[in-house]
Length: 480
Image 1 (tube, rainbow, N blue to C red):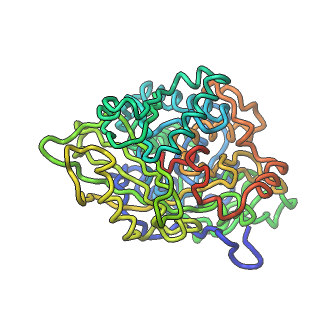
Image 2 (tube, rainbow, N blue to C red; image 1 turned 60 degrees about the vertical axis):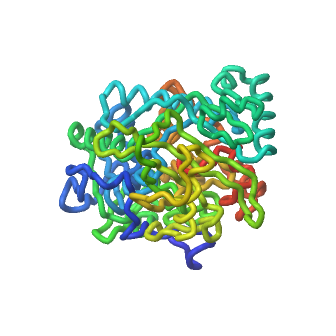
Image 3 (cartoon, rainbow, N blue to C red; image 1 turned 120 degrees about the vertical axis):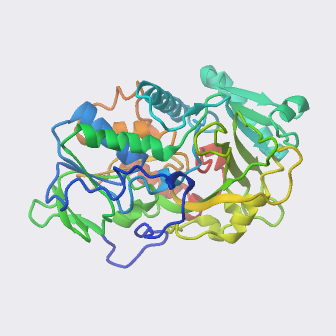
């Protein structure tokens, strides 16, 4: 589908052909590099998945291993496999337990458990490390007090969720010092968190499907130019997918395209907005290299002269991992970006102000043994997130577009929710029950309905989609 009146406000275009170099994409799987299962694009498929990141990969896995091994599935990727947001994120998986709907929090915890078990059961070489928790360090007192009030409320209504949290008040400076955030106005530890190499997880899923299923056809470097009703079928029953390499027809399409969703679904351009984020792989101070057992989020109210709060995030690469120098994967600084990165779908450029900020503003707030000044960056890159107008992912069939499903709009928080969201949408596409995916049921807040679309459009201004108003407490911690 294309717009008859030209691009809409915040509508995404095609992924950039020459993106910035992500730390995670420096060692590509040889089977996936330039992979095309067949030399030519198939003319038909039972299901077409557009996008090969965490959503597309797990949707294909659920379809072919759990639901419909006899269905012919074609996956189209504009760039190399997992070359979008999943291959460009912050490298950690941390469910958000407080400040969001409890059903969503429980779903994220289930997704984390599912991924952790999968990595263990299949011995996936993706550097998965279960951390001692995620430290949310508050650099302003009012924001910390707001968070504590929300946790107090959660303890009364959902004590099991609240048990996942530990509050460290400013009256416990020794604990803040041990957490290496001595200048924080308080901290909250989320007990469930992990670090990983996201590309390697998805590479395992995709290569396993290529080895085990004759019905899985992966076509990389095949951007989708348009999606329209097939002229050779009853309108709305089949869809024609146009690429530079030809056309493909199918009765079922899954848009696993996150921030790029509105490129093919223009009327979703105000529901899922592309937002560009920026990350650096910072070289740690030497002699000795510090070892951080936690991941971090640094949150603060707007600074004087700034129009958005601080919401930076950090995870350290394991010092003992092959090819690792203990790099600090540090992202954020979006309040310094042009228009907060809102509406930006190109990841082929860096913003110098943000890059300089990331190199210069890690220590402090983190205590790295007295290190200050600018730290060298081994890699600096950008990636495109899909920010949801109502903060929740959009999962389901698109009303008025029978046969098109969406699983996108994670608002920078896809790692702890995308895999089981993909399992739910895979079941939907085949008319099956969504229950049973890691014993988790898709939250009602994620489901696509006409009523939700109307409510979202009535309840939020378009410009709020990329802003930070309530963002931290709506699960919008970038890059997790």
